[in-house]
Length: 638
Figure (cartoon, rainbow, N blue to C red):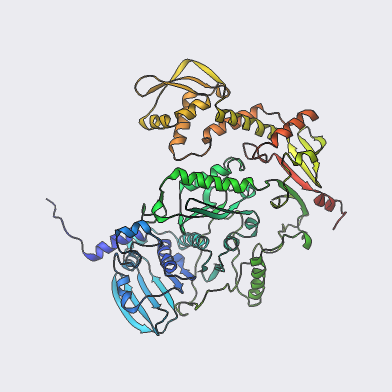
């Protein structure tokens, strides 16, 4: 029989460290979260070689008492919980008491800390879990932690790290999420001796988004805020103009913690569905506040995965908040013309945000000092791999701030006119979202003011209203109207069915059968007639008339799979996709001359829809051009 042995403490610590520290970014995450839990309102993070060689985290929080410092590096030592009952009422970001213990087990760690009322601070050095030095020194209030040579004593783990550039990219992505999660905290992030970004810490979420993503994104954001039944949702959501090709720009925070939640993502995407093109995803930064006992954050060691109590209620709440914000906004695309390479007149420039004015002043001041400035992300940004050559280590361990830190310099890119810098003078059409404070044009009330001018290219109808010119795509508009009719029939249970003879026999797995029984009434309203056929088999006797010709078995399987993924708000994607295709095939095409009476009828019905702005595939049904823009092209105004 193989002998059973008790592992030594060093081996136990290294195994435990593997669960908490898997790369430099996880070290930064644990240290910054500790800084935030200490009450800091200014945090500076500096890295060298993607954090492999050096990570330095500085905060102006409460600090640690000298006699408590060695204890902070012990396993399961924490100031954030007292008993297992506290796990149900967590208000801090970290709580397991393993961060510092795990980090010092696989790296060389140095801490300098001082409490507010203490005359001196303490410097403490520990490596591989073994204390090396402890001395009393002068230090500013707060805590600085330096982590050197990560995994120096675990070469097997170190060889699996990626390059410094790639590891630095993970840290950059993490720091952006941390800054977005706490706009009330000033974050300064340095990589390779360059300032990547520096937020003001004044609580303005829009300012943080500006520092990270740039002006083009900020211009297309809508403020969202909703509160009900102890739940609060707030943040910024993008207009359809900045729809993305992936979910990388969907950012969610719950109680200040960055999370990846399918419940939140699916609910928000469902609300966006009528506005976005297929295979596009929204841009949003959402903050949700919940009572701690309504969620479980201890699902995974990284604490990025959470579970909600009453998921469907949470999904409905988020869906309605996003939908209401989008519905209240006029989603018309406005055409603006300008000559590439020619700067726009001052009067045509958007009024800068207050933080932009300050940013320009800081940029000018920084430029005079010859400082290197990092540009904000472009709209099409994917997280960069941060190359890092650290500022000289001989410099002071950190620059702690007695009060809140204010930005010393500002990102230079994307500030000022949005000018396309090309040698050739090209005519450019730049779609922008209409100012949503303007009175809406696409309403039944505004319909009385419409003056139909006629049809051009047998495809587009021109309408004049309030010094605006509307262009309506007859195919997209008709497609949208037919699509909404089909959806309405499904919701009202008035869908015409077609009998299938002989019936299609479908054998369901246990999971599929469970889902089917839960949504049986939903399938009946859609026009399906399904009966038990013995065992796990079911006979499909009728299907929706408009779906006739499709494989009933394949369609049902796809819908059941969709429903099994989680809480669903609205119609499953597979059904709406089929309906969109049917509406497209049945709609009047372009290059088809419609009569004025037909056009008027189409416009009347289009204006009754909640979202008349986009067809089921997300293409715009209507674009608008102002009289002002047209007069500029004829040089009637300058």
